[in-house]
Amino acid sequence: MESVLFRLLKEVYIMGIRLKNKVAVITGAAEGIGKATATLFAEEGAKVIILDKQMLGSNVADEIVDLGGTATFIKTDISQEEEVKQAMTNIEREYGRIDILVNNAAVFVLKGLDATVEEWHQSLNVNIIGTSLCTRYASEVMKKHGGGSIVNLGSISSFIAQPEFLPYSTTKAAIVNMTRCMALELAPYGIRVNCVCPGTIRTQAIDRHLANIGITEEQFLAQEAPLHILNRIGKPQEVAFAILFLASEEASFITATSLMVDGGYIAR
Ligand SMILES: NC(=O)c1ccc[n+]([C@@H]2O[C@H](COP(=O)([O-])OP(=O)(O)OC[C@H]3O[C@@H](n4cnc5c(N)ncnc54)[C@H](O)[C@@H]3O)[C@@H](O)[C@H]2O)c1
Image 1 (cartoon, rainbow, N blue to C red):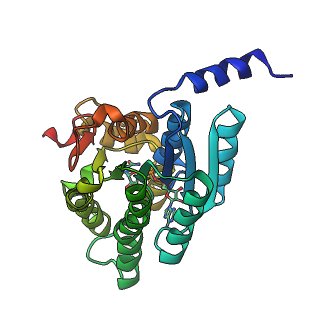
Image 2 (cartoon, rainbow, N blue to C red; image 1 turned 120 degrees about the horizontal axis):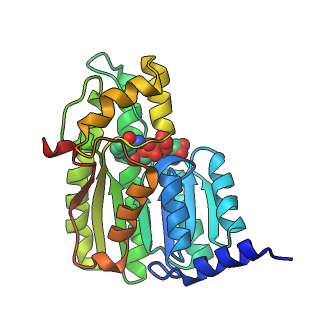
């Protein structure tokens, strides 16, 4: 028998209206910002498809379904063209359409000029080419069904220099102009393309960064928080809400733009 809490949660999901019955593909949603976005989209009534190279994405889909939402996981490496093409084909066959794509998956190659050719390729292959492949094959489906909305993930690193961020920043700067180029190309088909640029957000990527540079969370927060004029780092849900806005019909006259979600980081 359903518990009262379960029924209440189900009610909330059913009441979600912003993305009611929209088919939303979110890359890199096994954790972090992508997971928060997948969960929020499901709460807003979307049918969520998680593409991630980690099987952990399957647990996120299960959690959403347990809460009364609709979610599926397809194990996909977004840098592999055949895998991306196959995933989008399967989604079209299963759901009949794709309304929203969130290009969230990325790798963080945090190096300077000492980055190896292999590391450069990894950064470019996932963050730039992977984003482009997902957009290409998802937009081909969107075109057939009257349009859609695409949200890319940039960063404060798209605009500023940070020590040892060269390959990562390069890709994130590219995402801002890729967003404009894609928006121009896809506008005739009723597809909007925008970008969300977060400041420092508390995700597993930050945990890995701390382990790599060998400092404690306290030390990291002491130096990182004051860089944001709100004097703290952000939460994944705070980025998810901005992605939701740009993906939704509420942003129907917004395309080719980049929205900072950075607690004021780049204002000074
Ligand atoms: N966390 C931050 O401080 C921050 C700041 C600015 C921008 N961003 C951007 O937000 C996005 C999400 O960041 P996050 O912190 O949640 O990262 P994360 O590392 O916690 O999660 C990234 C996800 O992408 C997946 N992924 C990586 N390579 C993949 C591939 N080839 N194919 C499929 N999936 C792949 C990973 O498995 C993981 O689930 C990224 O685009 C990142 O650049 C993050």
